[in-house]
Length: 192
Image (cartoon, rainbow, N blue to C red):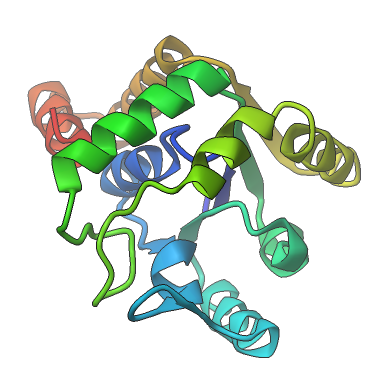
């Protein structure tokens, strides 16, 4: 896995997984929210978003997280691995509410500079409607990428198992006894 895209609804854990995978594989992570919005939550234009994606996919190794389905063709085409976090909408809603209270009035590393975490009715509705709209769109897109490695994760436990497998693969590849160091990096990356 050298070019990884992580997609899913708000609150699915895309940023957390991207950071943890980046730490395990030592790959640069790009959070689309951070680059697709300006200070004060002003939208970048579609052309600028495409130019940003062109810059990202031009690199040899990357992880891109974010579900901007209208501008996803470029990085989905270039990816060798697509991870779909198909997490329960109630769990996603719980996570975005928890995140909002944790970061209320403050910025996060996965959102644009000059923006603070916000919880809007639109975001809540997007999370709750995802199984009926977003999931169908993603499923249709994924059917066109049959030659790529597609990883479909449905729960926090599956995400943790996947990360543990990735850590083990990297440990086997390095052929060293760095499991404690790897566990420490994963705990730091996921904020635990």
